[in-house]
Length: 112
Length: 115
Image 1: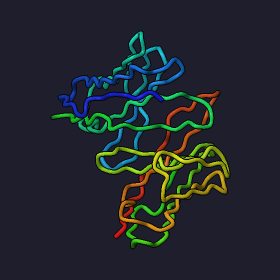
Image 2 (image 1 turned 135 degrees about the vertical axis):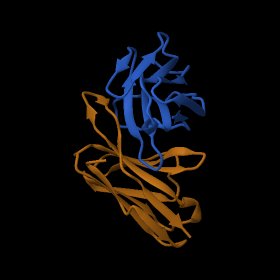
Image 3 (image 1 turned 180 degrees about the horizontal axis):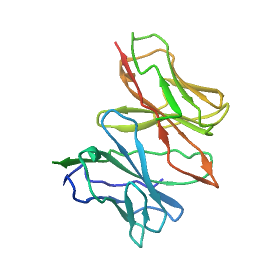
């Protein structure tokens, strides 16, 4: 599975959009981009995933560049409860070895 | 999360003693995973299972064994606990749908301290 690079930390003002970048320059054609977050002391929580097209759900939007070498997770109106570590993961889907490999993620601090 | 429970939530044990952590799911998901989380390392995969009696090693499997005799239960055993195994352990489940796995669902974690 391809490796990802994320900034170790970011700040965002409450109510503003939080844009979390992720580089995955070695991603291969059949690898998906997944985003998870972990609020302090809790288990990670799935946010969104995508292959090529931009995706949106009730939690966030995922923007993937045309060459798929980077992506951005967007939280449109960040709240204090969005303070967490956000993990960007790329992996193949299907098959028996469907394991997620976590990096160290980005600590997003939402400021009042 | 609803559908996946870990037990115990907290445990303190002595070096050299065996310890078993349990992950129980009610979702009938095929895949189950054990991770450990330590400061500075993020989450690291210990073992995983892709069906009853089908298990494989992850990136940090030394000192751990697992068993899955039923779909709903995935047990992680530390045969002889060491202080380096002090950590927070997370279980996760996932299910392939049409060849794709959607999100993993994680348990609330077990905090293990080996003294």
